[in-house]
Image (cartoon, rainbow, N blue to C red; front, side, top):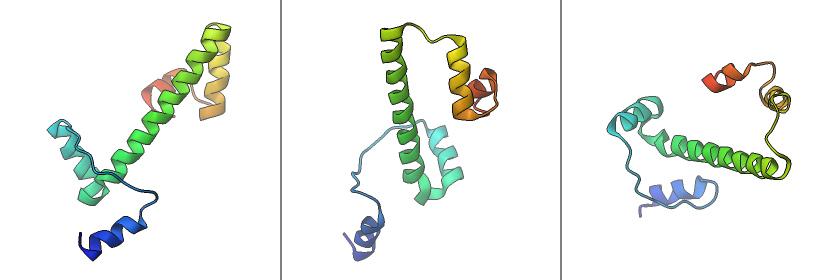
Length: 97
């Protein structure tokens, strides 16, 4: 490993591990157009972090519903307001929040 590459590793938070992931070519093309070649790993890292957080929230909701029953529409609206402010359920579903 060159000193340049070694120096880059030291500036990253935590340790990293190289993995191989297969993605559809059109996604890779769009990702590169948005991030450039060097930003691709960071973008994917943040996307995976986001998905893991969403998975964790889904697990929390599932555990709550198992213990207390399904969330009511009022509870869902209150959660939406707390998380996203004054938006509708449709805004959240469209990703407008």
